[in-house]
Structure formats: C-alpha cells, structure tokens
Length: 530
Image 1: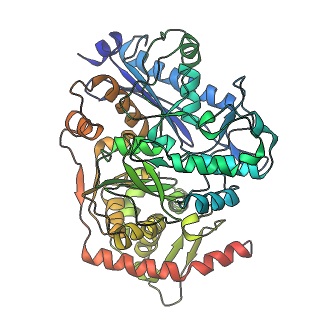
Image 2: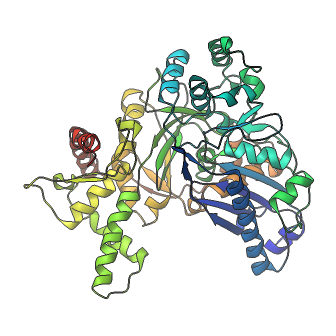
Image 3: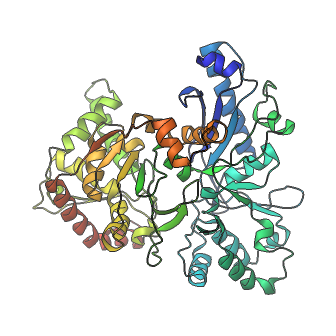
C-alpha cells in the first residue's frame, strides 16, 4: 500500500508534539515511515513574572499545525485526511494547568520554565524523601497553596499541556505514565501515582479545607498500548477547522516530550538511554532498579510503559554555541562571502576536533538562563581564558562544544561513577548532532560511553508520538513496547556508533575539573549583575 492509499483508507497515524518553540505533526504509514508533516512556530510569554502560553495560542497553534499538515498531504497526494487509524498528543512535560468544574482555566498555564516553586519543591522533597524538581506539577500546586492563591479552592482538574489537549479532543481525563511521572512520582510496582506520597500530601494540606483530595483532581494514569479515548465530534472540529476529519478515531495515552524522545531513539528498554541536545538538553537512562538515594540534580521519571528512568535535565545547551557561530557568519558576510549555515557549522565543528583534547585551558559557560544542576539561579554566558592558554580557533570552538554538554556530564557522573549504573546503548538526537560525528564524539568523551545516532532520530518527538499510536493499533502480536520498537520499527537498526578515545576522555576530564573550579567566576557575574 502506497502513502496515498494509506491515507485514503484511514490507515495513517498522526503524532503531534507541542515543543517550546514549534508545534510539529507527523503522519506515518503502517510501516511507521513518515509520509507527511506540518508545523507551527510559537513562543512563550512572560506574564506577571511567569512563563506561559495562552489557551488561545494553544488552540491556534494546534489548528495551524494541522492545517499545514493538510496542505502537505494535498500537495503530495492531492487528497484530504478524513479518517486516521490513531492519534497521539505529546507536549512539554511538567507545569501547571488547573481547571474548575466549568472547564475554565483558573490561572494562566505555568510552564516548566518557571522557577518560582523553590520553597514548595524543598518541602515536598523532604516530606517524600524523593527529589521533587521545581518544574513538576505537584511543586506548582503546593506553591500555589503556600501562596494562599484563591483559585486552589476551585480546582476540579489539574493536568499537563498534553493532558489538557487530549482531554478537550476526547473528553478523557487521562495521562500517559511518562508524562504523569512529571506531575507526581510513580510507583513502579503499581504503575500509578505513589500511594504513600499521595497520602502524605493529603495529610499536609488537610487543614486547608479544600473540597478535593489529590487523586480527585489528577488525571488517570495509563501505560502505552492502552486505548485512551476517541476523537469526539467537538474535538474533530477543534483539530480540523476545515471539517474534513471525522470523529471516532482512537487515541493513545498523551505523553511528555521526554517519553517521545525515548521512543524515537528506541531507548525504552532497561540499560538503554538517550540524550536530547538542542536549546536545552537532557539525558534519560532506563534503570534496572531504583537509585540508592535521592539526588537533587537527578529527576526520576518513567518510560511510556512504566520503567524507572533517571533524568538529568539542563536548561542550557546550544544557544551560546549558536551565538558564536552567528558571529562568524557576520564576519563572513562582512567579507562579502555567501554564507551556507550548514557548511559554516560543519567547518567550525570539524575544525574544533583538531584542537587540544583539554581545549588548551579555555573555558566557556553557556548559561543563557539559570542552571539548577550547578546551583545557578540566573545565567550569564561567559568565556574565560588566562594569558598562558592556547587561544586558537580550534580550541575556542572545542571549549564551546564541551560547554554544551558540561552540565550533562556532571549529572551523569553521579549515575555512572557513584551509582555504578550499567548502560548498553546511548543514542543522541537533536541539533548538536546535525554535523555528522562531531557532537557524537564530544558527548562520547563527556560520558565515557559509546554514543549512537540514527537517521530516524531527526524525525524527533512527533514521530515518537506517532509510534505510540502505532503501538496502540498495530501491535498485533501483543509485544512489549521495547520489543515492538526493536522488531517492528527499528528492525535491528542501532545507528552509527562512535566510541570515545582515551585521549578525548582524559581531555574532557581535565576540562570539567577546570569547569568546576571556575564556577565561582560565573556566580560572581550573576551576583554583580554583569
């Protein structure tokens, strides 16, 4: 069956993901290959000191993204999308969307970027004896309680961005287990919210007199492969304003962007992991057992099928690196030389590999914003060198490449060196790996581990979400999610692997020791508002 027939017969599957700067849609066929796509660009807004996206922007973005997908299908195949085999919605994890009984949002959506929840996160981490990050939904909820915000009395439903969109399209108040694990910790034995922590939270707020308990307002937790509802007639009109799309299409559980990244890189099996490196970065290592103790810089979430995952999340990755590349672009334009950005990145990145393994002593901090892993509440992009350092272009670019994964290394050193976690395969995806081989080699040196990159990883989160839709309707042999991905999607493809060299590992270790020693310089830049 060709792509046109797949769409005409309703066998295509749609995955949509709400990223921080783009909403993307991918349509796949029965063999899980992308056959059409659409997108919409958007930006968060700082309103009353909090980062948000308006409900109007959410719906306009979804509709425009779907309309772009329709245009792509029309251009390629000269047909309309009327029926689909399945749909899946994913989005940025965490955050806070609270609604009353009338389904009205009570306060503007508070995204994962907000760091006003420090007091709440600290209290809950101590109460639960479990690391509760600032961006988790339970931190936002308890901070609103500590702030005596009136709206808390009226909460009827609390969910994430993916959970909200799914609810409005299907009528179902559910959430995929991976996304739910960013609201409140999951018990891997029950594949549900931790009953112990739910009880502790309810006791903590018992004297507040709210008319709800925690489980009253949280979405129901669902693992991958379970039906999560069907597109309602109202939902169909909201998604496709042209009116061509019909109701009744099954939905898989809505997921977070971390979960779709794991799926898109075939990293849901225990002892596998993936690193996403773009504007921000995070690593996800699927564990065989729980860690020996909580760590402030490691978040515990789950795969879309409920396995425990150790997540190291870094607010900064390639933004400062991109800014320096753009400086070289300006210089090239000044000379009157036409600029091909792919060529420019390729030249600079590959030249960096000719530099010294320890960057010749040069040091860079890529902190556009604060970095919780290193204890910085604010950020200042900073380049540091001494008079005796080897200040060459190759060392300069290498130092910035190292900086893009420096914080990631600090978090993962805990997993590999202190917790002795074993990993069989780590897969990289995201903008850092676009220049072939360079980002891979740098990350391999940082983590002292082989790093693989697959061609399909460029399809990203919406493709991963579509694969979860495929798992719902095409898992005819009742396989586990890991086996379904291994056998039916990736079919043995593990990508191109780069193994770290001893020289690179030793050089990165020298760099990271200097990096840690110079952190007070970064802190001083923040303190003195430089």
